[in-house]
Length: 595
Image 1 (cartoon, rainbow, N blue to C red):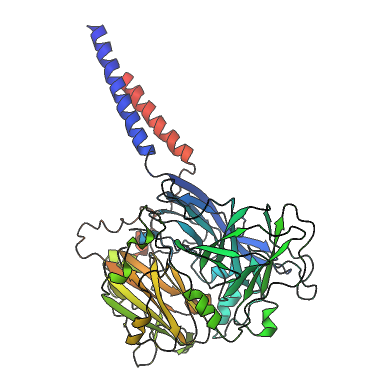
Image 2 (cartoon, rainbow, N blue to C red; image 1 turned 135 degrees about the horizontal axis):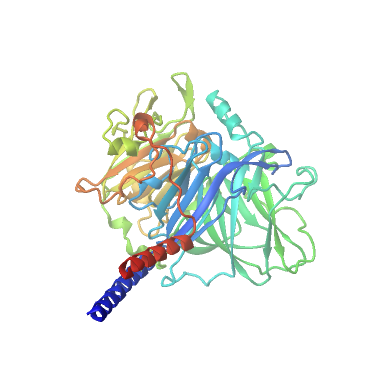
């Protein structure tokens, strides 16, 4: 009898172990996870030869790169080592169904100094070149940025041969004053004035001119092999300057803009505006007798500032025979004329035959055939006094961030935090301070026209979405302007420039529920209130399945401060440790069964 029981127990144990093994394999066979542990802190820097304080991640500027593949899950534990509240936002990454991870003041309470908070989201149905950066208190002016690269799955072909290497470059205008001093100037109603230099990957310019560049400045050197083709991912993470990017003697084959494969065209130079990202294929096909200059120069600035606002790195062939020589390659000669730049922007087209994150062609979404349900004409003006403060506006409203984030106020039904009454046209009335947001239509198709009545180029970015750039021209937008729209291969991206005295029109399909930030990327105007949020609610979702639930580690503030518990949201860092915990559970259950 005992032997029969032993056989039954053994058979039961084997069945339990087999079941646990199957469950374990299923757990591990899902979309992979990538775990990161970061500390954001102040770091000593001297990019222009003068010691100052910058913001680094794990002591680095730029910070660590996030290199993942479509549909992977990112878990990024961020410890705030600054002396101010902090948020990081994932620029261009569409947190599908997960606005809680967006990292802007309308969706998240800031991470207090000394606290940590874990971001967790899936890079769902995306490929391409993006970046992360602080969204709070002008922190991006001090650094805190880094790369996000989302690679194609193996089953999705690239629309070009696999490059021999991948290189990321960050362009930024830089002030010798730190972000606190810049805030104080704006709070006092003063303009920031011109920056003090231009950085490439957090480093100052190569000493191409002994008068303009002081000795001892550390510069970026890009090492390449002759005959190879490299993918250069170039991001403008600066404060307000547009840059013209070029490489001495080399062509730039444009292949991607912020997650969309573009029609492949060669350029000798490319204007990259604040917040924008591009990928170029560059073939090392030049004579290696010398190195070559890599240049990012500020656009539309007067001649006195132009030389100072030029970043220079070095492209170094492995068989190079000497340093770069000769004058820097010329920028477009149109200091006061944006015609070259606007025509270049119009030339960027969507590659409608290439697959994106899915195997179907990018052009299978026929955006030009969809009926528009909502139209918003957003007009900006130069900063102006409102209630004694210098503020920036959209449609005469300067956004005031409430102490309780919009998403939390919506979830907990807290009245009076915001109003769903943002005007869809400029209104003839005095400007005002308000927390007024756009009431978007879930799965509606929204047309947004940015009308720039200010005096400088502006860039606008929409979180949670990519939009189709369909029109761009000088003057005032009118209903007749739709006759010029590109309804076939306008590029899909998340950040677009608007030239002074001109307009840009985009179309966006509002299928990602949540409350999403629409802002100017120029940090001075953003800080002064030139932003709005779009609320997208699924009216048929009684069980809240179109938005993921409030995270367990949510930070509470404002009217919900009493809900905040003692912080305890750290996670097991490595994927290996997660697997080990699962195996320990298996063996524990097996031991209990055997016992």
